[in-house]
Image 1 (cartoon, rainbow, N blue to C red):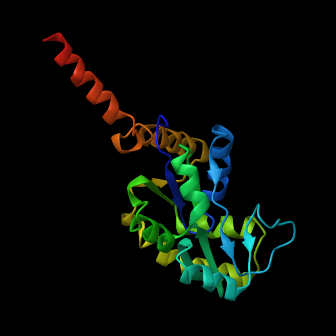
Image 2 (tube, one colour):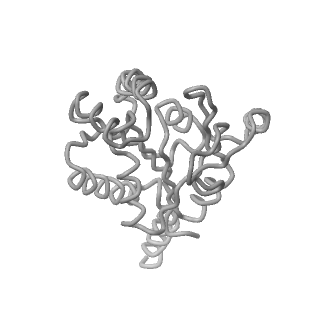
Length: 213
């Protein structure tokens, strides 16, 4: 039996609040962390690799997977479908490995309400201000003005669901937020529900009392 069961670690935030950067830092901190590769119906962007950045699939294939219960969560965002295939996540956590998710509140809610919800740790990242959020979206240079406007509109909806998470951090300093994330994950790994061997240990200790009689 594994020393512990893996965690589904969910990081959510509005675009530009720093979750992608922090996710990369967590992967460097703990090389046993695996990133959940989402499936999507959108076209690959320049430099993206199928199977590494996303699993790029046709819409009919995606809908088939949803219908067959093969998706742990899914959502329709900016005209495309996104979702997390269930099988590799179950395999990882049963082997005692944590899986990191970069998903929105809809996906987080679906996972929390799934049979794997007991093993889920959800963390929401807030920006220090809306002005700073807008500045970050512009400075990263990934989107045109129309897309940035859509992302800002969606940010209001994302932020309104902050209270549906286990932990909420204001990311006003990347280094400080990174340290807080590491502390949270380290503590959650020690929860009773994440240590399946505890039942056997407790029973063994109880039997040792009987041996003393």
